[in-house]
Image (cartoon, rainbow, N blue to C red):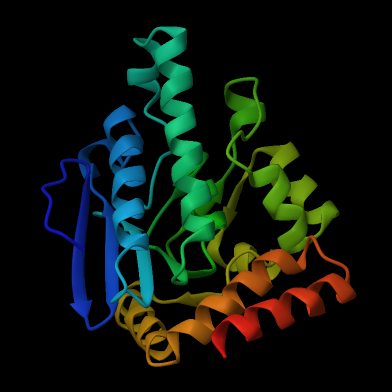
Length: 241
């Protein structure tokens, strides 16, 4: 990826073929402001064009994965500016899900509201024991999670568990997240970075075309019947031969 100076995110390459994208507003608990939404979209576009990238890790700088939208900034925006910011974040989240390379959420602390929805768009979630999760929109702002959680969660954990998470608005621990099915790996905080990098390296060591095709099939599997999935498998296989 070409070099660029970001102000609200940070991109590093700790091991070959693996990039780490950190939301970088630790003093504001990595709350997503207008600039961060724009930079996430621009950065993900660039990463998707990087043929050397085989796995991406998304995390938050400091002790918080993310606090969701920057509500203080939102309060000062005109309605059309708020909508523009929401659309940029929605596009970024869709790009995370559709990125050619697999995306791992490395969840180092609280993942709240829109930041939790970013994690749900990732392919795998590796979670610190200190992490907590919440979609508080129904209880705090009289709205609902608007970046895909009510759609992604039922496919991931089932309707009942998704309803528990979304309709209560309550906070869930890392162990509850694992039990409910939206965290794949839970580790002590001191092992989070090493274990996530090891997982990313295991993925990046595999054939990138095969991994990318498998990711697409897994993503589409929830929307397909078996026959449609087999047909897509045939198409993807023919593209590789």
